[in-house]
Length: 157
Image (cartoon, rainbow, N blue to C red):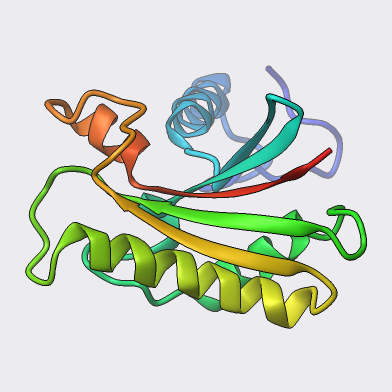
């Protein structure tokens, strides 16, 4: 695939051969397939559920949110109706945590609640911990454990 006039190939020059551009495009495709979203949204029993994937938000065994994660959480709740009541539910996988998975799930849900309270003080939030309860994935696989490490935000509508 030839480059457009004035374009420069990354890692090369405008005279880059097709194989260089093709290799780059293959790498981009692989990267896009491996990027995990921060959150997903769905409607469940008349409620909007925003699922935040804890593996992206938090380091292992931590409830500290990065500045980027804080900003993204604020953006995700921007469309919640004014004055809505929301629930923030924390979940973990079955990998042992020294202070207990219930504690970790509560600390993570509270960290998300603090960000939401700062971004949307009009919302009324309740925080609940679930620890290892209610898995959505198989705790026997890395993929399943990743699915189980989550914080869910729920509200009517």
